[in-house]
Structures are given as structure tokens and as C-alpha cells.
Length: 168
Image (cartoon, rainbow, N blue to C red; front, top):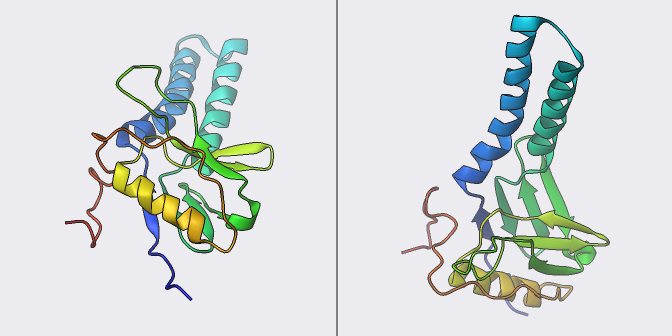
């Protein structure tokens, strides 16, 4: 029997994290400024409600990083660690990415039943893609990797985070 594959950790971008949390806070801030100036009206209620909903979505669903191991996928968000066993994953594919010609592929998503979960908000490098492909193939349940490979010039997702021990 083969030794278990080493876990792979992919990181979301700082830009994505800041945007995910700054947008709802800006909506709430605009509503607060309007309340200070004019008092409560219908628009302020709507802005606060939208800001609160977007903030909850970001806190519970926007991945900071995702870890892949022999048991499955763990999406780490600010308020939870969402575990998805390989037995529930239908396929690993691409979420919609940039339409620019520079980006060949969008970020990774996991298809679980009829739902798709964003795994990270950026495209991984070729080495990370190959490690993920091996994890998908070698697991107890072979998960199809229908995501196209990234371009050869993609930097690793850990570039602006801490450097993994095994990266040289």
C-alpha cells in the first residue's frame, strides 16, 4: 500500500480577503453616515441589511485557505472549518475567472452534488495543480479533476503567505 500523499494547502489572495470584508463594512459605514446626517430612512435599513448579509457570507463562506489531504477537503473561513469528505465531491473544476487573455484558468471549485464551493480565489501554480491531481487520483474515492491546468507562469498561492517547509 502506498504512503499517504502529503497534504496540500492553497491560499486565497489578500486582495480577495480585503474585498470580501471591506465591501460589507463600506455599505454599513455609508448607512451610518446617512443616519448621522439625515436619520433613519428606508435606504439606510436596506444598506445595513445588505452589509450584514454580505458580511455573514464572507465570514462563513469565503475561504482563507483550503487544505487537501487523503480524507478530503477542508475550507478554512474566518468563522469555521468546512470539511468536505472525498466521498461527497463529484469533481474538482474551475470557477468562473477573469475573462482576460492573460488568465488561462479561473480559481478552483469543488462540485458537491448540485452545489459548487469556491476553494480559493486565485489560480494555483503548476506544481500545486500536479499535487492536487495526485491527491484526487490516489484517494480512496477517485475524484475527477476536470479543471484545466494553469498557465506555466502562475506563481504559487503561498507566495505572499508563509513559505511551506518543503518549498525550496
